Length: 174
Image (cartoon, helix red, strand yellow):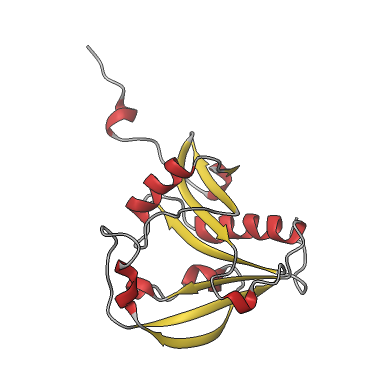
């Protein structure tokens, strides 16, 4: 009796051309994915969430929310609050997915995308690869991360980088 080898060794996408862009609608499914793939875990709400899927399986996602810095929350800025990827995703999945989501933000009329990196030693290389510019580096107190979720990882103080993408200066790459 034979077995389906895909159950033991699931097929993997070879490149980003094998991926499908999806607008994710199930926060529960995305949160399960983020609990496995992102050190800050899931989210309580979102403005939009996009996924990269291969053969129906989520391999990466980005979550957008209103800016956490209320001084930026004037309707012209959207914040990328989560970027989660599986280890077995194709190379360049992150920059591919962020570029697709960036197109959505531009079509929605936003002027800037903002995101932060630094938690768990994350420099923000994917944002740099996707064309963002680092405009601020500050020391952040990691002690507050345990206040919202008991099972969330904790960190000591860390360097927090703010990455910004100005959509008013971008050229369409269709």
